[in-house]
Length: 251
Image 1 (spheres, rainbow, N blue to C red):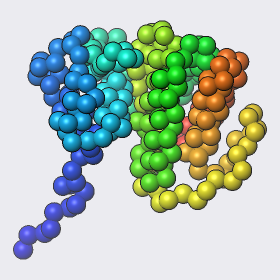
Image 2 (image 1 turned 90 degrees about the horizontal axis):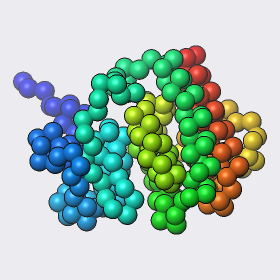
Image 3 (image 1 turned 180 degrees about the vertical axis):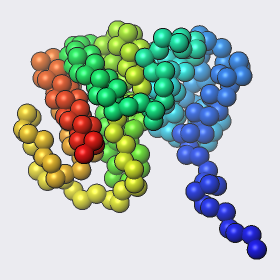
């Protein structure tokens, strides 16, 4: 008597993963060559039958995998294969905790300055894209879904808003290795208590993702106000708290 198949082994890939897989296959097959533009959002939406937000999430994942580079207002372009000297030679799962902590230490300096520059240089369109990433993070957290892509997209958009491609390159090379993942599918979270003031010690009894969402909002609000000093401080606090949360996973 045959057993019923395990649902987890037959589960279809997510909508964004279908787009990622489709574009990646074309890149690997040479149909999309380095420097060539990836089909624009409307074309990908029609081809895969998905929404604009799904396409944007897929593009963010392609960026995180160092397969494409996005030029704001122009499009996404295929990157050459990564050289052996890439910062990310091992997949996220293979990295040791000490390596991830070292990457966060690098991000503390890099992204604090990036946030300050973004506060000076961001465009209204870039600001709107950052807010969309925050909305996606909150929506996915509320639904108990993974938030890694939305989290990384928010940081990447800030790097893009600097107008300096090397901020983006370094962040993409590091990838999503230092973003904490949940091992279990969360149920709908309870509403967070009153938001702490900026600089207040991080509460220990609340969901880490709720804290992350508040820290992201503090960074976004400072960038929206063009407050360079506060943007730098808010990003530093967020990444320093992320480092402490990562250290806590050892225990």
